[in-house]
Image 1 (tube, rainbow, N blue to C red):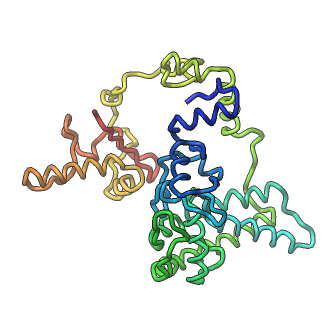
Image 2 (cartoon, one colour):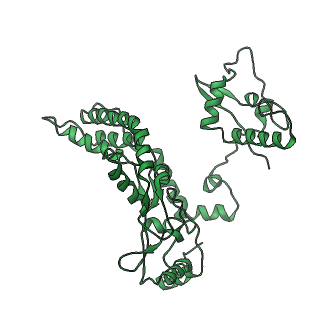
Length: 349
């Protein structure tokens, strides 16, 4: 998918009609043009999030695909609108910060204090900003009005999925008010705690008693700048042509100078008498499984299925097919500090 040789908008649109894009979309695709014809639309109206998501995108809230989301608007245009749905508690932090700051006779808050408020707001959000369809975004505020939630509360995409009753090419969504009310009731106590934290952090920022210290140049800025150079200098394309899986960085430095064989950890001798490594507790393992144990879950699931097929007693715990050691013995499986557990399992094809 390389459009750098295109010389005109007309040529681009003709190219888009004959190509199915991946990861991005266009109103000029054969799919959208066929939908326009199907609905007898006068034209097509989509927005930036529509073109920044692929043709196979599905709304994470209602589960509809793009062909099910489009419908005719009041002007008889084929409408396909997506929106970035966010937790409005982020707005609350900034609003309360500004209100607290101007209460004082002499304002002491500065730009760093405001940045502190904005940064902490992300940590108080119940969910990440997520692209959803316009009907689901509207269902959020309609459900809040129906259930009479706190004005700064937001339903997450998962919440919306639970109470909307979507239909193809129809909007707005019907709402199951009872389910929405139950979600608000169950989360009300936690929301109150979050709002208390909002007020506390806003006061800290307004008093200029925060702990944010800005960097002259952040690591993200450094990386973004370097990637820009990689792009315009042609290093990305060169790495791709040369088959360098590590990208441009692998062309500029040796990435395996001191790296041993991939299984060197198996042969490493450990002084067990003086080692600080401790066998993880059952709680350590449970925490690892819940936070980082994707393959552990699949290993246990596989054993349960095999147990059922073979009609044999269940295993006490998963063990490696090759070495027969148990999960708790997989190396390196050890504690870092008081409660950080690292356990490695990998899939072998």
